[in-house]
Length: 397
Image (tube, rainbow, N blue to C red):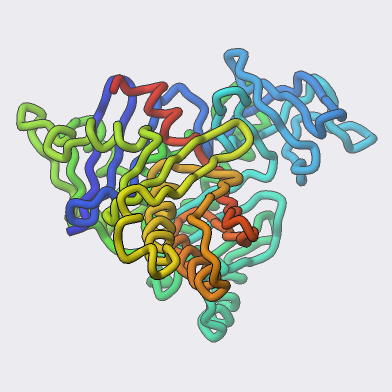
């Protein structure tokens, strides 16, 4: 049974996904006042720093964000200059792309986008795009003819994976919502004072529901009345197919977090060591530059794995690493030190299994290659902070 649970822990909201009893995903969302991906503000350029290829902009309450100058595409600026460049003191509309990290400010962009279940509407573009996961040429040709008639040349659109075989009426309904929202943002952005928030990005726990591609959850369990109202309003606007899956528990009932043993599960997701069924284990070490994962034979060295060149242990480790990357939200460069294997066919088989294991990741993952020493380089798109930082920031474990 596919189950989603939502519960409040202090100032944060925790969302966890389960396939039967197996934890498959976790997000932790901070208070509403924090900067979150998708937020749109009227910002003021505070400092332009050519040496690092960007500018620092203020989005209110002395919160400075970093804007890369090579990402400035058709900015919506209140005042323009003859040289066509940004100047200190200019006011423009920006969108938070990446939330602030431990030692880094949030990053913002001027090419704002509005994401729905089926569509993404882009500022600064005029073309129609399709998710790379949609490969049906006939369907794309049909939808290109249909959707192109909706566009007026002031924005671009992308059809997301969820749009494939969706009802055209549902896609159009969402388009009208996104278009009206975009026009309101542009209109208000040119009249509102600096520091105004024009749009609140969805919290992480609702983004995960919006972006669900595989199936409709069997149950969405909520115990907090405010969270239940948010989820219900979200389902009404974005995912009507989720409405009859929402189960609201009485706040006085046994806590959902305790029923699913979340304290223990979250503690395991900040532990360095992860045991495998074979008796082997992983050691996961995040650093400033990258995350390093070491595969150790442990008790598995006493079994069959010695005779088969440790391939079975490495394959088991590869599948667990793919799961841990998603659960812990590991991103950037990830280096994995697998158990050394002498046979080239075993090394090739391991890389194939690793690529299969990461194929279902909602974020873009690339398995680069394996060195002669058995080190494998992986890159994973960074969208949010590592889960460990959110746990440390918001939860008392």
